Image (cartoon, rainbow, N blue to C red; front, top):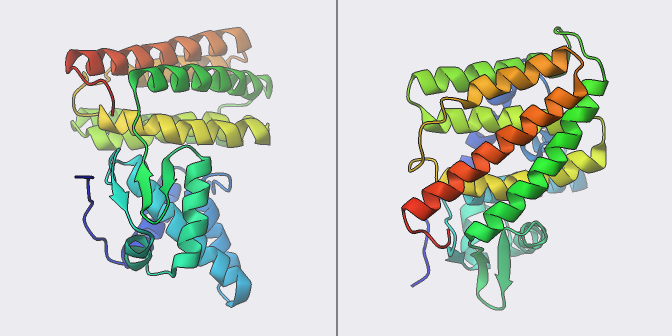
Length: 274
């Protein structure tokens, strides 16, 4: 039988948006327009007056709510649901649900099932290796572009990176793996966000979302990532020093380390797919 997730009250959407705003404030008040969560918050603020803009905002909020459930594995690989079930959960009609499912299918997170709604796609170790390789290439180029900007220590990108890494280190000190994962995600997405290449940012975010599922599934079974904040510090030192080659080399190795840790955990527990 296909996995079924718990029904979620429609008020969850409001909680998600508040959490997105709170997370934004914690990271220095930076509005992440390219990030799906912050983009929807901004869109909502612009279109509170109603009409077509308000409808688009509602659809975006519903899209974020469903996508986050998939990314965080509240709706795990193999989960199936009907369009009407999702519409009831999100408090919208079936028409925007179809829009949302099309977007998620285009992003490689689900597959549409004729007359049966959708299914969350599984990930295999080969999928994870391939996604990690693509993400490494994108992030390496992003950190090169970021370093070439010759940023000062007080610049917004470095402040955001520093804040994210401090949250990651604090979470590990409190044995909060979920908190570490959230902060780690903010750190890496900030590199993509501030690189100055919109197309790279957009593509990187899409790959990151898919890779994040593997991160979350293996979060409790792999070793505590005590070296991650240290490696982040080294990357930031290279950015501050305007050393493009070192920043690229350090980030590439950091990504390889993360990939191998996840794959080793899958092999240790005999997981052939997620």
